[in-house]
Image 1 (cartoon, rainbow, N blue to C red):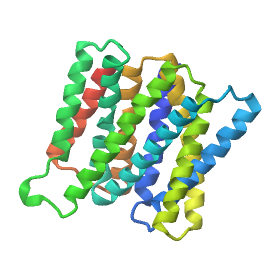
Image 2: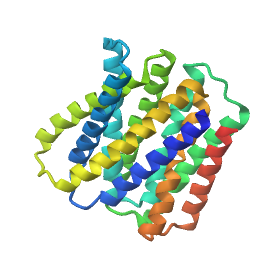
Image 3: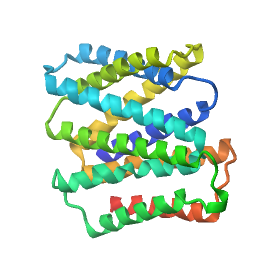
Image 4: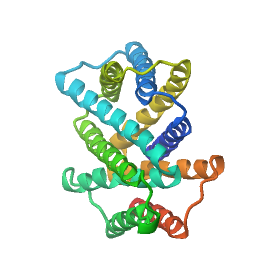
Length: 278
């Protein structure tokens, strides 16, 4: 069941990321969209927690959950900005290499065994990331550096987030409590940011944000279940396959074209992810 849960997370994250890509460049506020999605998810989880009765909260749960929420919000915002600077079919696979960070932590911090094939997969993914993002010097565009900068920030946010999620699972913290703290903390962070940026609110942001919030609840609930009942060093790479949803969606909806070496990079990245699952 935990593999099914990981696949469900992969699909939910892929659909959410595709929505972020579709809405990028449409004049919608990234902070407002994120805030609405966090608020909707918070209310859903709060209602669910009241129905099933919460486990006792403590300071560690609230701080850990809020930190995860802020990291996820920042990662999503940076990813949305990266989508505006470069093609999603390349951006998404690059960001998905963040799985390397929690994957290594599973071995070094949580002492999970990583096989030789999985180590090969990690090396292949790193090499693929370099191939995908490479642009010949005569073709470098003005937005290349900001694009890569946003990608690195997103990778860092999602990578650390994965480590904290595994930590919460190892501490046997109730996932409902973590999710309430996560969405609540993220919502407060984004609400404060909304006052700083002072962008105009739009109805579309509420509709799309609510939709993403519902998808996120399913995705993260499945994620925590998979981490608690499965093997983290396999769960993380499966979740990172969400990039394929964005790649396929971008090629179909936006007619994005890839260069031959970039296609090879994407294929080897997928091969690397597959190897880490064996």
